[in-house]
Length: 251
Image 1 (spheres, rainbow, N blue to C red):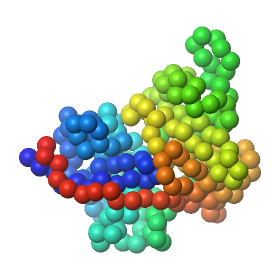
Image 2: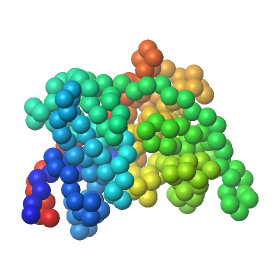
Image 3: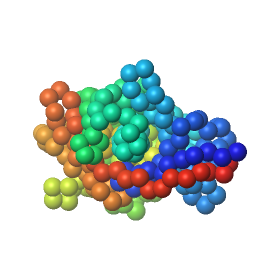
């Protein structure tokens, strides 16, 4: 059995793009960086009645909205002549307008967020943050700790049901001039990824609301940047993507 694939990435957030759904037991193996192709997630493209549909699987098999995966998939599919230059694309129940000019930009709704501080189980000092549900639940904290402490603390925040019953992604923001550096711990991956699209979306909502910003540029740990800009009642989300490889996975 063999499975044609493309390997794509957005700011280092990498995916395997397929055109048929893998067996559930194969998803973790495809994402394995030693025994499979290696990726943060698996994407499956199909054509809907009104536009492209991109299904997303985390390595643990869970299905989540993935903005970086959606952008990277649309860019690769457009290069192959499979999708139009603009339209509506679906990912895990969300229908989003997109445009390719020359990179892929998405139109996203302005959603609410709320303050939500995390209290460590040992009774230590609370971590000040915010919670935003943007298709994925996210906890966002600003300038609260260094990266080493974040990597130690994020798994506990991710699993705390007082923040989100199904767990949450965790984001640390630090300002560097006009750029916001972001580190994200992702549920489903259960580790830090080089970038997270929904994490930057959720973080932009918080930064725009708390600092009255009209535009926010993020630099995740992978190469490239993502800019989120106010566009009327919506947000415009755009950044770099790249096709890495294509081939056949020998299942």
